[in-house]
Length: 464
Image (cartoon, rainbow, N blue to C red; front, side, top):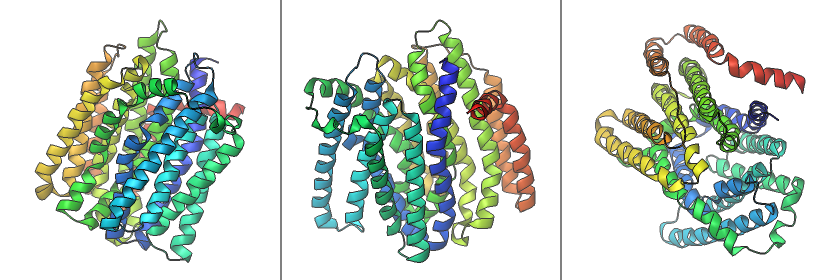
């Protein structure tokens, strides 16, 4: 199979597995605003933010490690890799839960028991999911995402609409959906059946940890850029502002999902094609197609999001649209920075990526603190955008060690400016019909930008 066909095949599988999840999450955001107060949603968002910080620490980034080792042709015993990583993650998660329970005995957090269950199932599910991905079972990976989304949606609808349970049902639903997905993956992937009977390989664990542990500071720095805003908002502005900011962030996560799909599709191919004679041309072409895809989605998303919020979202959250444009643009530079981070994985120099993300996280934190009192939620948005722009510039410079990118800077910067113009237009236009017309025009621009991506995927789908 050619590298182009491999990318298309993986893209289709990851689209099915991931896009369904985020589209349903996108729909459920509209439901949340009518059943959950801004302060309760702010607390829930803080739980998710804290868990996202703890995940790389507790998992020791073994979800990345298990995938990287399993796609390595030198590694023959896949079951031993899964078993070793799964036992490490299980033990570290249990230790983390014990520490949390001790802390909870003093502070008495709301929903502590449900948080523990959610935390454990999320860790195990992530490790098993990446194991299935490493085994090359993209169809099972995709269906698992669909199943998880479906169970999550049904549980949330029942809990919110019929049982009126409030914000706690969001955590309960996540526990149920993760558990169902874990059982399904275990039952369908034969390599998982007896992996726990395999002995723990200390040397293998040491080698994988040598690769994965240096990624932890890098991921924490990513967390600071992505999520530390919530704590600053909570401290200076309060939980209600955190709830509004949470809704603002939900819409750009659709783009984050798309970038995740393409990242997963490209990661394996870029690693394997590193030794190709046309590597630089191949990588440059990928980079261009990637930013055209991202910019196209942003141009469509900015006016459409204001329309959706004005029509479907509770009045308590109406101001959320004001911040989505900047957050949309942030996702572009975040995704491009992540793509260039594959260079660190190619060389297994994961420690080298730390400096760039640490600098970006410091920049984000300092700007946010300096601006938050005067500019409120705009401070969080602008600090995140500037941090990602800085990170992208640094990683373009770093990437020269691994490959040479040829970038049309006039085109790249020009479309970025067009996105800013679209933010201004959207701020001036409040009529829903006009917003839909603008979205339709931008949809045509998106198709024009991404014709070379869309046509091969459609042909592939039609042949299946």
